[in-house]
Image (cartoon, rainbow, N blue to C red; front, side, top):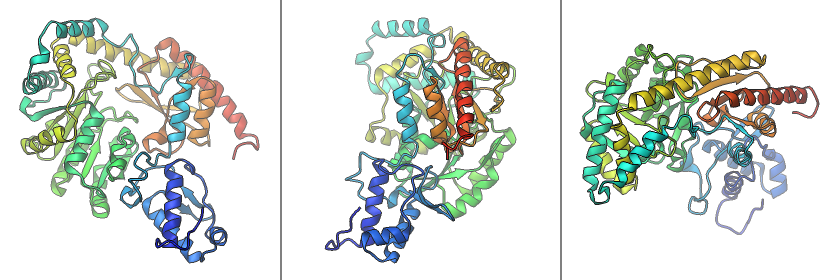
Length: 486
């Protein structure tokens, strides 16, 4: 780091810019300690007050934080990060602050190995993908002149079938004219950001949540504010305080079999959430990806927020069918009131977020399949059996350090371990033993949580994967008992 005394840019700004570049390009990683104010001032031959002012500005962005007795460190989360205060975006346009990038990079490299028991991926195993029905839909596509159909016709047909599908399986009454399709759920979120949010504004997101990992918020300059949750899901009564403090513009929630915790918001809390957001005039974005996948067929989740918001005043519903067909099924949808749809209808073309014609035609064909009931039932039962196998194997192998949080549905299990070890260190040991999962910190949770996906590993692989996890736990405990771990 250098200070150019001849530049017009104030010295404290030069320090801020250089630290930002070092953090954004990965030279400084999450948890790294910055020099003390006194030491840096001495090294750069500037007044200590100059460094103090620079550190104050860095703390204001959320890139670093200070703790009594621990110094100033690079942040290990994205909560309340203020992207608008980051500088030189033209120069840094290919970079973004990602405190968990080292974990992702390691997982990506290791997961290329064939012998890894992969509890991280959301790709469906061959036993889950309805290959016969997929082939049937593809054959139908080759036998029709879809290439010559207008986009309006394609969108109308797809939305008509989606409306029938959600009415039959989800109990949601929606007019097909109140639906717009997108290339996926993340793209639906991107479309909502593009249409309704401005740089510097804040949104409330459940903590933890898969939405926390959606890069569109940070890249669009949107501040993510932590929405408190307990074992029953988000706490609606926390929203007024968040509104007063941060002027939140939207609430994003995954109320049924929440990803990653698996919690389901009660009917009472759903009604309270809608009541509070109506009073404050805050839109709710309801994310629904796996509500069909209840482990007990006779115990269905509460009605969706969209259905409970009878006049469609505040709820925007976002859904998809990736977890029923395949992760390569790039189609999502948004239900909303006509005024909202008019804005989204213009924006979807401006933002280039229109799904391909062939994807929509494939989805239309698949949703008409007479065997759809049995397909969904097979997928639901497979996830139920894998969840039961996972929990029984934990008990069989006496893995007492891992405590599963029981869920009534979904595609994954949320667990907690009791090792006093950072996620990056623990996942590295697990990767060396040939087993991987998603550390909770990638969803904004504290260290010590894990999300195990049940989409890829069959029952035999689950047992082998947990044997490897047990070895990793033993090695981690041994390391903690030595002076090698700090």
